[in-house]
Length: 330
View 1 (tube, rainbow, N blue to C red):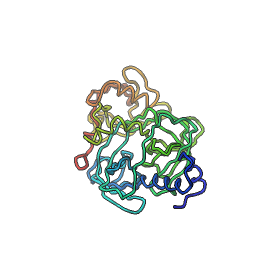
View 2: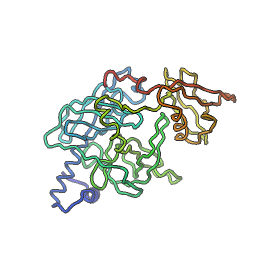
View 3: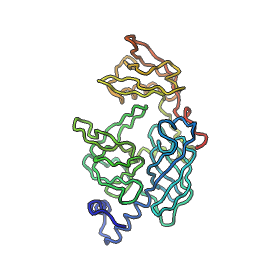
View 4: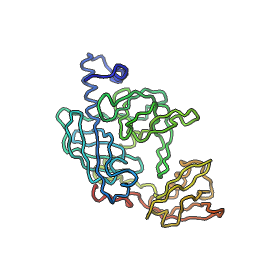
């Protein structure tokens, strides 16, 4: 398999040892064989069909010999099934195994694995630091892999009620980030691709990059996802509202139809003023304050400003999974 010279030079560094070059190439090929194309198919009545589409495509990573695949959750949530294409062109059906909203990770299982394809070894993102070299590998073989650097380890807050306390931020950005594998200097999997962002540094530099979910987030919930399709740990309360920061304030940008916030009377344009008497400055502050009130099922209290009037709100929260239509897939 031919490799681009610049990428080859870095990837060979990522595989330690003094093995002959032919053996190193073989090890590289084995790494890319475990990084596969994933397509999923979502029913028309799925809650996420309008926003995420009914056919989704990205990358999945083989993590055991039975066909277990790790990917980013938005590629497979509410899917009725999918298919996986390996590097040799072999395409097989895949079933949904589990989904976790709190981490953003999802598991699927390929019906079979071609002979000779080995799972990718799991590493740990705990040893990643700023400026560490990494490789971002998407489905498509060596031509879909690119070198990058860790530019930050800090929290990522998503407007859709999502908070990752120790996300991996990398640069330069990879164009096929969805489910992509982040490889460390031992050639092990340390992260799963989630997003492309305009500012990976977290300052005014405006350097674009990607956000990865650390693979460490999987380990505490892996057995539960396989056995039950979900984590057994208490989950964060979900309200069903999208919140955006604008000019230093936090505004409700969207309310999910039939969700808890909609039923409680939250409206688009409401400005979130305080939670338990304290004003949150960032999305992360907001979610931490809301979630500190209790797990899913807790009535969440906070104040909003609407048309110049301060309004106290009480929203009976739910587990987001109960709002989704998962019976066809889990």
